[in-house]
Image 1: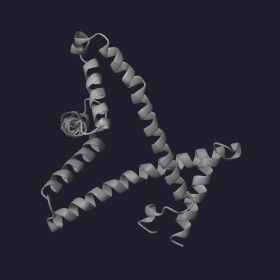
Image 2: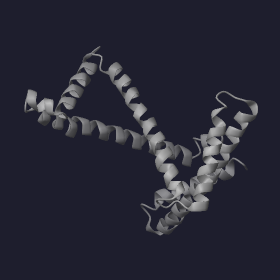
Image 3: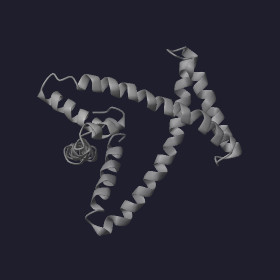
Image 4: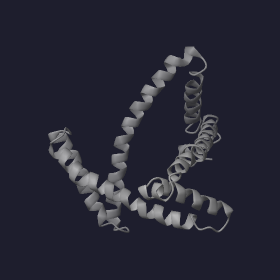
Length: 205
């Protein structure tokens, strides 16, 4: 029953969410399920917090790899929770100060590191080893030139060509990726609804 009941709940909920777009009578049930989704998602925050504490306490207890960072994580987690509960989360309060002066700069630092990974990936991808890579290299070079003033100084048509590349070939590629991702999501959802995909049950096949 531990396997059958979750599969039945998934099937019924999934079918209601699909039918609400085709059968008007199921619209109220679909709206109720979406409200329940918000409730369950909110409850998942507490599970995430409990999991964070459990994982880092376990690392500290058994001195796992990089365990010295775990006390800092737990202390920061506790400080942010206590500060938010005691003083509130409005602007110009201690919680907002900690967020703006610590969390936001650290997040900006992490995102700034992505520039180096992008540059490394671009260096590998832009090697003209075949005609596809050569086409990518030329297109990227034209687009980058069209985005800076020196491009129009070299030739006044470069910004126009750059905009055309972004509006047509690039947009077509983006839409193809989005359509492929949507089809993959639909296929995965149907596999879960009909019980073919059961990884969400904890790895059961």
